[in-house]
Image (cartoon, rainbow, N blue to C red; front, top):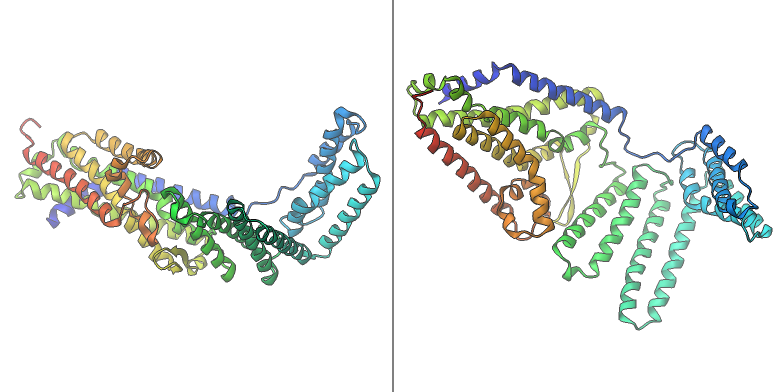
Length: 487
């Protein structure tokens, strides 16, 4: 058996196509890593106006007359945008001041211009608005971000107090329920404002501010869904679990000051290794599995193989075991290439930061070593690769047609997401037993809810084994009965 496997591996590695394929993968790895390093930015930048844009707005403004009814609204809009643009350009790119300008000062500028140039002019109110804008601008110049944070906290406290008073003064059950949700939202806003002040997180668009925004958004979703927790649909339960997961993960970011969502480093790439490279792995495996038997018949070399003192069963088993070895070899090779290229591009420092997942079994955050997490992802997605490789192997054995075996296997992989989406969207229960719904065991990791109700990891493993055995049994029966006299 070992000599048969060695012989199969020798034949595979004598082919130039396998080396060309791995060179293509290496080129893609280098390209994607370069794109990640030089193009991908973890944090989106605030929009800044160029000098040309400002001049263009000034030129447009000169053609408009605010005293004309037809021009008035457009004049106020462009004038407000121009004033905002000039103000934002006074501060460094991505500074906390720019966020405050867009969120808090820009509406005041528009209101001031409405009083100054609008149909119902009010010079006194326009001056009052300008004084307020000047006061806020002084806070920006003095780097007094805490003023705005305290203002947010004061607003949250005031809103919370008003909502509680309304709740105490009403007897309508539905209104009380609605007010409870609004109170929870106000409490979350208060918590976020307090956290910003206590942890001294300036406004901005860095990972801490993104975590604050995500924490607030998902906490509100959790609070809303918890109002009817016992009557949630399965999709709503999945949404609830996802929101709860993001709440706890963003809380971890804020408490530990670690950007666990950073994707433009080696850790981030390895975290998504299977999502990024599974297609290449599957293509290589299917190409080999889809030709390992049929080529012997097409070239007539099957006769030379069968005259050796081995049973047909051993010959076919050796070829399949070779396919499994190739699966391992392909994953390891692509992983090593990514490690080398990624290490050169980004360094290895990021690998010290653990992968963070919310575990629904323990209702707690779980820290996992990067390589342990990577191994877990590979292990739980291995059934996809094995089953597609087995499909290509079986079709190659049954029909002696490499093109057919490779094409059908790749089409099966590409159509899997469509089949799964149909099953979920239209609640097609019978598809729950189809292989594509079950071959990705990562859906069960950390106690997450699977794609459809009443699915378990054990049932999915059993279904995958059944499909595997059906393909292998048919392949062995056909191979044993094949007539090679006319080959």
